[in-house]
Image 1 (cartoon, rainbow, N blue to C red):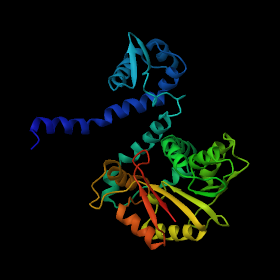
Image 2 (image 1 turned 90 degrees about the vertical axis):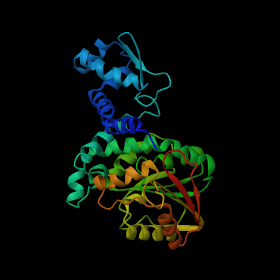
Image 3 (image 1 turned 180 degrees about the vertical axis):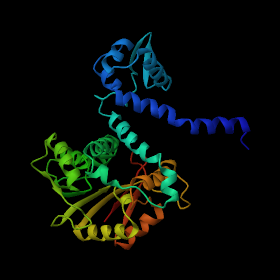
Length: 327
């Protein structure tokens, strides 16, 4: 049995977790991390750039130093040598995720009402309804998907294959495929409000002659033709069971003989109390998406089987996601 003092300490750590989150979100919104990234380190310089009180700002920065996300020397603050997440210029920067999390936090505040009124959120604002929220969402998903995209291209061969990227977002997976495999080609498909941002990411790559962006809604149909590979990354949890069934059947019909479906999401154990990230993400679906559903491993595997797929489960992929490769 865990001693009561240890229970209290653990509980207080949980209940007070919002405090450091709020500090980091506030510093991001004030432009403090951009200022440090631009080379300003002295507290007075940072305060002058951001238009805040230096004494109060130092208290926020000191808390971030405590969590080893910044380093401090006198009145000077810098990014820690091994901390990439707050540095806007680092490839692994989480600044977009911070901004997205602030949007989500505002929705979580109304969780009690969402539960008692039996209504739920809508992904509309982050899928084109609000351009700022959509950009924050896409930026956050892009950075978090980079390690997964690297895993995919290092472990699976896409040479000469035609790819359909459904719910492409930033196109991070297709871009990684296109960079590594110079004879790969295909289409990136997403909702009109997202597709315009997808085009921007694709324009910054050097694969625009082989990959293109198509706007549409896969609930109403997907691009014509057959594909060697179809990507469904972080899409399944957006669908109701019936819509997921229809999507998987449609996907199966679009694959060439021997073609592959790559599917990731955040899956629960059968009792639905873990792992940690999917258990919390299941609640986030209440505040974010009216049709959202975090599936168990058994549920997604049954759905794949019912759609006629044989599959392998891959848990080694970076992050809290699991990959299914099906054919």
